[in-house]
Image: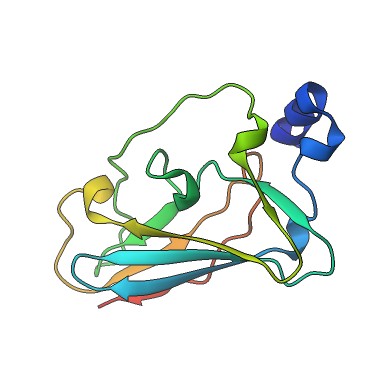
Length: 143
């Protein structure tokens, strides 16, 4: 049990903690090349309801590094956005997904990664095991 799950269970009871994370799938899709905008989709194809923390995902807005963005030269771009400090999550910080349900959010790269280099960018969502517990996504290319 990670610190987030333990803290949430201690404060709000076991039913508030993340559940069935292993069945969730994270997908990233390019919806606009200029300005670079992505759609992050968390799907629950499993047979049981699942719960995850929205922290470190676009579902909470821009408040942490949750993407790996590589420039045309393959070098990882530095995240320059907000980094929030937090206490234990509350019930409002969790997303419940019924079997077959999807949660999604759009995210524009420009503000958090400074001036973007010309050329294709390779981007993937990077899950945070101790925070949201989500898996990484496959990489997508923004032309």
